[in-house]
Structure formats: structure tokens, C-alpha cells
Length: 115
Length: 112
Image (cartoon, rainbow over all chains, first blue to last red; front, side, top):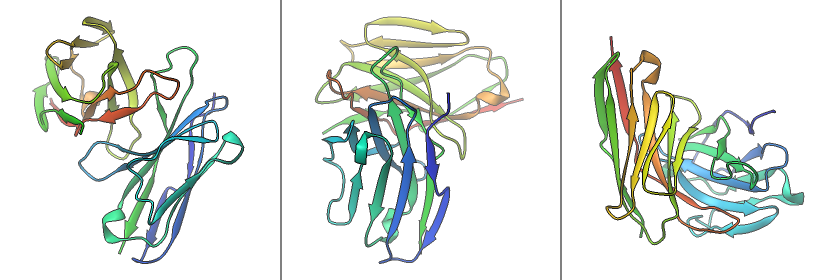
């Protein structure tokens, strides 16, 4: 089966600009996660969707970050305006309730550099 | 808050055995996962423990003690390709949307 797809793979922007990341999860996976991974740290959950509903967005900086998952399939994460501290890899992951539902499948990530 | 601790770095030689520990203090606990991440790559799932004891999958084993809030990943017959970062992750909720919090990661270097 095809894995989790993300685009773009790399993005360089100036502070105060806006940026958007796209994720397409594995077909049939109802749960979708966006993580922020700063260099040398573990992934930090930003937002979790169940189908097209938000399950947890407690760590999402809502003054500048937004995310949506229309139709319960692919998802977009947006940052507006970006700050220097937003430089990180943004990982999308998905999981299924069937089989080993505790396994998250991660995409390759988008490496964001804010200058 | 949620707190997970792991050693920051571990070094071992090819063919050796290495143990990566993880201790946690979290508001909820339903299980412990381990993920491997090579530089520039995506995290990949290694194991999940919900109950106390040892789970073995090939060269990798994972252990959990819920009473001690402690787990470890055991890697045997180390190979160069095992050089990577390893993350433990605690499953916080027992519902349809499993929510995980990740540890800071342990960087494993395997020397020839």
C-alpha cells in the first residue's frame, strides 16, 4: 500500500510570511496527526484528527497555526505568520483502528526553515 | 504535564547488545511504543507494550514495568544500520483516537 505522502519536502521562508503543508494519509486511515519535530527533539503533537473532526489541538499555537481535514482524507497545516522558532520538520502520520491500531505511519516530513 | 526521560546518547560496537531506557510520568498510561528514526528519515514503528513483560520481535525486544513507570528497548546483534535515534512514546488515552506523547530520543551510534 502507498505510504503517507507529504509536500513540499523542503520550504524556506522569511519570518512573518505564511506557509502551508499538505498531507495525504494511507487510504482508509481515519486518524491523522500533525507533529512538529525540532532538531534533536522528539515529535510534538500539534493536532489530531479523527475523520474530519479534531480530537486534540491543545498544543497547537492557534494564534498562528491552523489545520483542516476536509472530507476526512487529506489535510493541510498552515502557519501565518511564521516565526524563527517555527523552524522544524513537520511530520504527518496516520493510523487505523484495524489490526495494530497503535502503530502510526509517518510521512517523510516537510523541513521548514524560517529566516 | 507529561514527562518522558531517555539517555541522550548511547554508543556500542557491532554485534553487541544495547539497552535504551525510558522512564515516564504522564497523566494517563495505556501503553508504551518505540520508534526508530534515521537521520533525515521518518520515524518507523518498532514495538508496543500494553502489559508488563518482554515482547520480542527479531533482534529487538521491548520491556515494560507499569508499576515502575519504566520500559526499555533491547537491541541485540547490533548492526551498523541500527545507528539511528530511538524514541519511546506513551499512549495517553484509551479511545478511538489514540494520543501519544514522545520522549526526547536516544541517539545510538554503532561502531565497527
